[in-house]
Image (cartoon, rainbow, N blue to C red; front, side, top):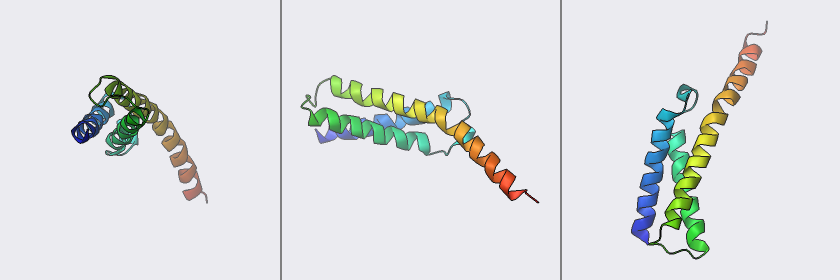
Length: 98
């Protein structure tokens, strides 16, 4: 079971890293955000699937974990750039106010 968790964490991080280069506007968030979100979401999905009693050697734990990685990283990868642009605009207006 421990080796499966290590594999899920590794694959989740690599999937998050790959999604960083697939999604647009990657210059608007940090280098480690997407892989870190992938690791967190994959670990959480694996933990929940094991907690509800799924077989560690089965396919559904992987499907849940990697599906959660896809949903979370894509959602955050699309949500962060507009929010950062808005926050940057507010900060710029505040800093340049005479």
